[in-house]
Length: 318
Image 1 (tube, one colour):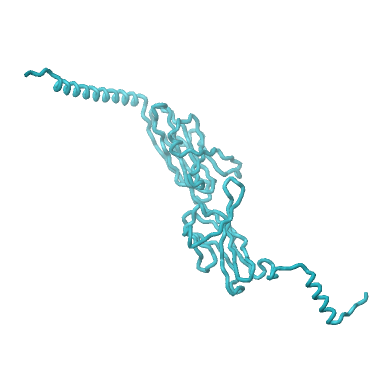
Image 2 (cartoon, one colour):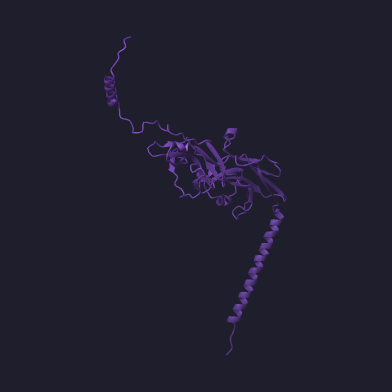
């Protein structure tokens, strides 16, 4: 192969010609992030609701004469399959957000369910391209409340049909099991489940949108069932286990309710209720007593009215 040697004058001319013909490039011919690496390890931070959390942002500060740090939060819009990206402005709203001691990491104190999302640290420096970290997902756990057992007050419309409710509330994520049993489990206990499909157990509680107070005032349901509800914020969840109660022979009824299988719980939470419903005979006695009391009150008012009428409307002598 022949080798051609060019003079420095010719080679310089050809180099200028090549540079002139090349497509234009940005003023800063540096690949994105090549001048600085931003790390956000760990990729996931988990915090309990009400605790403090710090989201990391690490980079070599000596690589830039001056720099600024901005934070963005990205989260999925509920039920829409789309995501929104918001720039965090602080010390503005919410005031719980601030820079950590290193003046780059993000501090949230305290953490709320509304803070769920993926947070991105963006480093800015004059004359350089913005460099964005790989993102840190903030997961927030809200453990369920200790279960509470409520006895539905009887109504005149259905005096012999009552319901017993076991309620746990305020939990996130939607993953929990509520076990409700009667008289030590003489019958199969009712298991209300949410988010446990990976265990082969589909959700047993359909979603409902009525306030919990209206659910407890509705007509008693004749069979056991589960209700999954959400609070007004759309983040906190309720799980309600409903058990029918038909008054029969007198005797103490024992109910036990346990909430478990939630990632925010270290141990199961349980509560119990012992209740002795009134017997049929006692109810009849109470009804008879109520009738006598009402009759006595009616007679007393009637006698007082007649006496007043006679005193005012009796014959007068001039």
